Length: 211
Image 1 (cartoon, one colour):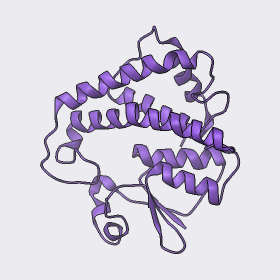
Image 2 (image 1 turned 60 degrees about the horizontal axis):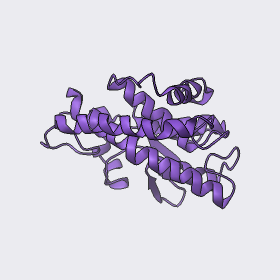
Image 3 (image 1 turned 90 degrees about the horizontal axis):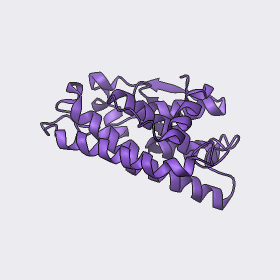
Image 4 (image 1 turned 90 degrees about the vertical axis):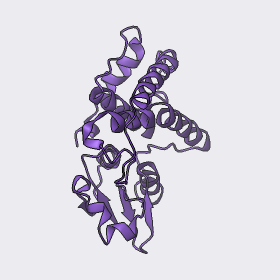
């Protein structure tokens, strides 16, 4: 199998962080998405959504989406230490929190960045080059959504070291990506949300994020 990636991309980093946590390496090829290499062959045919990362299996099956890649790698190749949970209950609980973080934080912030930065003019939607206009309203909505998410999770984090409890999980990797997106938007977490700030600081100390 082979991973096609662009390490500077947030989703690409999530897979790299996963692999570092597992202390594993797989064959990898960098695709320069800034130069539009993903729109050229053979990459365009391999992944018509024109995004990274994507994983090519030995039978030429293509798996894209960072969490899907990580889930496959854990279940098929690198089960320990687990990031997705070892029981049905924990797998569902971790998936629940990861979905919450992605839908209410990671995705809205990603859209906010793509609608704010001049770098994303004519590339507002990932994997595209078109004339869809950037919209300040989407930036504002992204900030509003992350404020609400942090308010919702702060009490939960009062009794939990990580988002799912004492164990570091794939949802914490998503959480780390949220905090890095906040930095890009220059969004500061309100000091009243001390548990969220503590979670962020705990994540920033984890060795796996040094990729």
